Structures are given as C-alpha cells and as structure tokens.
Length: 451
Image (tube, rainbow, N blue to C red; front, side, top):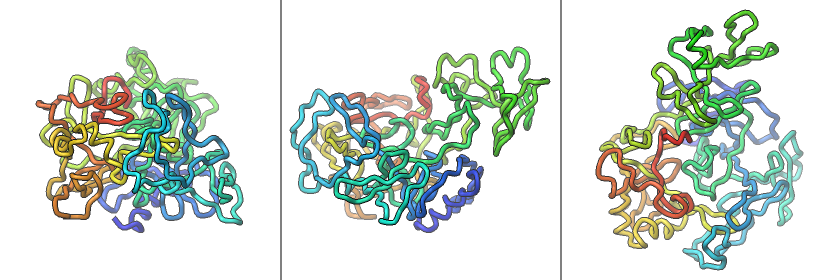
C-alpha cells in the first residue's frame, strides 16, 4: 500500500466529533469506526482511526505516537517518569537484572548490531518556536533537544511502523500480543457518555460500563425500541440514562416508561447481563440473540485462517484447524528493548523454540505460510518474507526465504506438538507463561474472559 493512499483512507474518518464509518479503498467496504472527542493539537499532528486501537495520535507523516510510562518490574522500574525522557542514545550491552531470577551484568546478544533506545523509538522533537497546546507540552531532553509530551509523558514513534495506520510498537490491548517492551499508543478520548468506557480486544473496541461490566444488545429489539421487559429485564438489565442525559452523536435515549430512560448506541438499546459474575466476564456472549457491543470491529482475518473451538474457548487456527501462536519477548535492559520483532535479535526465540538449534526450531514451531492468492484486508495481518535461518526480514522471493503471515508485524506459528484440531499444548511455552520470552495461543475468545 502506498503511504499516501493509506493516509487518505484513514484520514477519511477525521470529521468533527470523529467518524462513524470509513470507506476502505483497499477492500471497497464501508465499516463502522469509533468516534472520538476532538482535542486541541499543535500544528503537524493528526488523529488516525486504526484497525485495532481505534483513534490514535500521529505525526504529519502518519506515524503513530507512543508514550512509555514508568512501570514496576520484578526488581525495579523501567520507563519515563512524567516530564522526563530516559530513552537515550547509548547502545546497552549488559542485562539490567529487572527480571528475576536473572542477575544484572549478563552479555546481551548480537552486540555489533544492537540499536539504542532512540534509534528504536525516535523521539518526537519540537521545533524551536513550538508552543504547548492544552495537554501537549514540551520537555527538554538530556541532550538539550526539545521533545513533545502528552499528559506530561514524552512522545516517540516506532521504527517498526511502516505506513499510516500501523500501530506495531504496542497496543492499548493490555499485553495481548505484546511483550513488556512494548510502548503505549496515545490517542484522544472515546466519544462515550459518562459511565461508559472502551477497551481494546482482539475482536475490536469493546464497549463496557465504567465498572468494566460487558454491555449487550438484543436481536429482538427494534431501532430505538426495547422489547425486553419483565423477566427479560431482570436477566438483561437495561442501562439507565440519567434524567439530565441528552442524545449525542451515535448515542440516543429510549423511553421505557414515564421517567425511565435507557441508553442506546447506534439505535440499539443497551443492557448488562445478570449472569456475568464479575467485571470483564462475557458469559452473555454465548446466549443466542444477544451480542457484545463494539464501537468498531477489527477487519476479518485472511482466508488462510479459521476459528477453532477448544476446551478453553475459541482460538485462531490455520486452514487445517491447528492452533496459531504468536511470540513475545522483552529484553532485560534498562531501555526495555523488544526482542520479538523481525528486526531484533533472534537468539532468544531460537533458545526457546529449539535450544538454539535452528532446524529443530523450524520443525517444532513452523511458520504459517501464505497461500497463493490470499490477501489481507487490514493493517493487522501482512504477508512478510523471512529468512528462516536467521529469523530476520528477507527480500521478496529471496532464495530460501518464506512468505509467511505476520500479525501486527510479527510472524505467527503452529506447534508440532498439537496433533488434533483444538489442541493448544504449546500455549505459555517459555519464560513467565511465555510472555517475557515465549509462545502464546492466539485466543479469539477464552473462558477467562480477557477478550
């Protein structure tokens, strides 16, 4: 995709108050996207509505903006405190000991080709005459340069983002598919009334109450009309709208009875489910005729994939039903470098997948290859060329290279230990349930309710 075309596609959503639909020129489809609250921005910045994370801030070239708020590790802290950037230009060669039980001072792999933090996460510099705007402020870096910050956290772009709409350096999904080295994409507030929130899930941007209870709609309801009463309304509890609430954007209000008002989104009355035992659970999703509510859904997966039902929930699988896995890795360094991209050191992955034996690794965790003629309809899934001997990116049709599927820029795999459709024996392979360095199954909907 050409950068200009991608920018035009995603910038089409930028109307006052955000957009409700966007036309994707690549597919010829119109899809609903999330509306956002317009915010003041300095010149040179914009909002792009992305496939997974919804509206995000981007620079003039369409590169997503990220922050790196300080986080507690097992043995210390990593990240930027408010008002200060700790992302520097030193190329670190030793481990930091932030992830017990590993001690500090261990040699890091590939010393000759390692990148610094600023080379991996370029700071968003402010011009000499730039001035703060609302939550957009300017900090002074240790080298004296001026850097933009949002809500006092310094801003960066990512070298793995290639075209406008890419959000490959991190996600608001809360760790799903990202290593602890990921950064946080920054964006405007969602256009929802008080009492609601929007969370990123693998299926889309899910609407919930501010207490994180799932929200549902019914097939039996009409446009701005609820047909759920009496016993139904005790099981599926209508979400009340306060007397002072007013319709706004895609939000309307249904009069259930004199003085009893119910919120509706895109003309569908909204409910919570009494059978959901706690925040984040989505038991009502399995009740026929009832559906979770999303401000936008992710585009469909390529036709090389299917959804497979397992004893633990629904998981992404290849065309033969074998569970698909993604790989996560974060280095134990002060600058928390990623080690799960095609540009990063592959020694960690080879150690986990084959005890540093590349051939064993390829047999145990084979790539999911692209079938002839199959294409992706989104930024989330791309066909990439990889040198299987090194794990690094290859040129198209390079000798020995494989054309494989990547989710958010990272190749996906199956596991040789899975013998039957529905097996997920490779899930949590690696360190700390596979999150620091290892493999996790690609859950679409799991019984833990995290989606």
